[in-house]
Length: 125
Image (tube, rainbow, N blue to C red):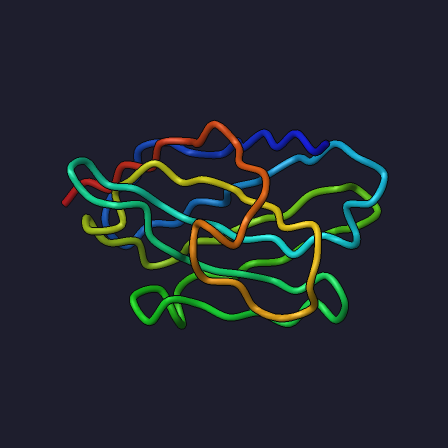
């Protein structure tokens, strides 16, 4: 069982930056593929970024590519999402997710086994 707790959300002006963190419990965190998703009001939860457990390779949604960076620190059981050049359309609740098997990239909510409660990010124009 893995528990995920996100932090770092808040209110920021367009063009600003935020860094989200996700703290994970569990001894085998280093073997989990991790992802970030977001959900805006009235919309479905959507993929933002993913990082593999084996080599730390990353992939991103087109809407955030070049602006967001996902990273992980297996020694601290944390995964982070650095968000730069934020836009009002980035406003959403951001969720951290973990998958306990596989070595590739994972892009859908069904791919992940564990979820955090989410952290609100609001970008004002």
